[in-house]
Amino acid sequence: MTNKTSPTFSHSARTNILWHRRLGLSVFLLLIFLAISGFALNHSPALKLNQIALSNNWLLSWYGLEKAPAKGFQVDGQWLYHNGDAELFVDGTEAAPCRAPLLSAAANDNGLFALCADSLVMLTPQGQFVEQFSAIDGLPTALQGLAVVDNRLYLINESIAAEFDPERWSISPAPMAVDKLARSQQAMATLPQALAQQLEQHQSGPSISLETVILDLHSGRFFGQFGVLFIDLIGILICILSVTGLIAWINRR
Image 1 (cartoon, rainbow, N blue to C red):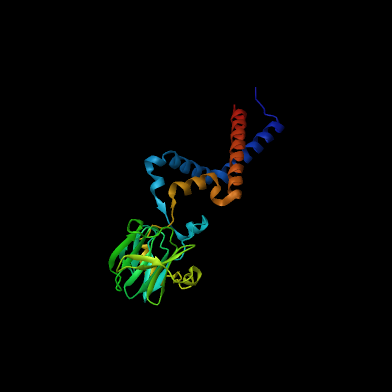
Image 2: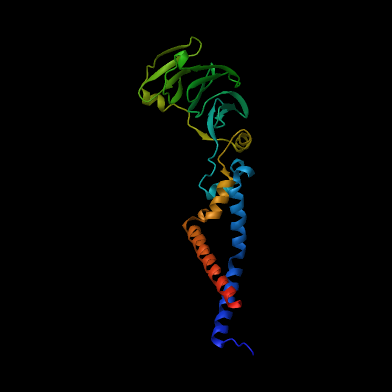
C-alpha cells in the first residue's frame, strides 16, 4: 500500500524548509562570529584580553578618545613639557621628576622653572636639573602659575602672588597685583611635530582593551543603539530558526 502525502502538507513542509535555509544562510556568518567572540569572552582571563591595549587612532576616535595634541611651554627658546606621568622634558630630554600636570613654566637669569602639581622645579639655562622645591621647603600650596617681571620670579594662585628668590630660598609678598602678574604668564602651546613624535615613545596615551572591543562587538554596542537592535533581531531569527528546524524534523518522521 502506497503512503501518499497530501499536497497541502507537502507544500507547507517545503515552504518551511525553504525559509529555514534562507534564514540560516542570512545569519550563519554572524552566528560563527558570535560563537567565536563568546568563546573568547568566556576565556578572557586565560587569554588576558583585558591586558591587550589597542591604541589605533581610528579606534580611539570611534570611542571618543582621540589623542589630544601634545602641548608645552616655550621659554627662553626651549620647550618644557610633560609626558603625562611623572617626568619633565626639555627639548626631547628627560630633565627632572615632575608630578602631572605641568601648570606653568618661566625663565630668568637664574635658569628655567617649571611648576608641577606639587613642586617647583629649577633647571639650569641649558635644561639640567638643579633643585626641586615643595611644601616642605615653604612653597605655597595651590599654585596656578609662574610669571617673570624685571627678571624676578613670581608664584601665583587665585588670590595672592609671591616673589620667589631661589638663591636665598626666600618667599616675599609680590609688589604687583595678581591679575597683572597673571597676564605675564607664558601660555601653553602645541609642541613642534618632531618633539611630539618623540614624546609618544615616553607617553602612555589613551587605549582600549581588546576585551572591551570584543564585548562591544558581541553585544552590538560597538555600533551604538542600531547595533544593539540588530543583535536583538539576530536573536529573534535564531529563535525562528529553531522553530522551523524543529518543524522540518517533525515533518521528516
